[in-house]
Image (tube, rainbow, N blue to C red; front, side, top):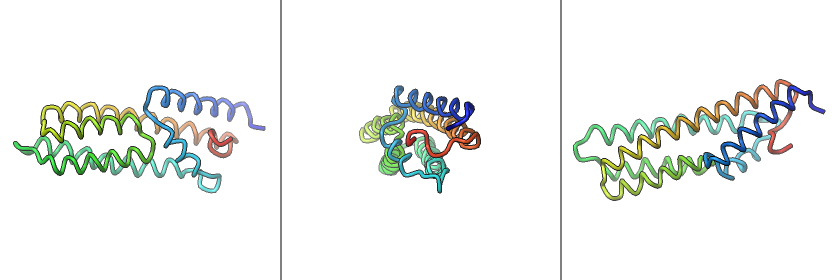
Length: 156
């Protein structure tokens, strides 16, 4: 039986996950990613998500650069970057970021620089929110494991 500290931390993790799902930040793909995590690899999800963050930050920088540095934006490359971000966001269950990418892609397909810049602002905001909340989730999860909880909370 888990100690009260681990139980409290498990409840904190579950509350945060419920919030992220209710707000449309995450979708069921995140749960599928969690199911791949086992006691033998307790950091699997955070490692995958951290790779996503590293790659996404490069893509966001490139998107901003493509939109800011050229008088006539390179919409073909913008579309390529958006597709990459959309795909990787889908693979980790980052629902809101993926949905904003869809809107970004629509603006890009119309060669709408102003629309792209507006959606990029939303995308950067939603990405930062996702990153902060998932870092919070992983910190609580690490505390829970150290307090005597084992496995990922959605599996137990």
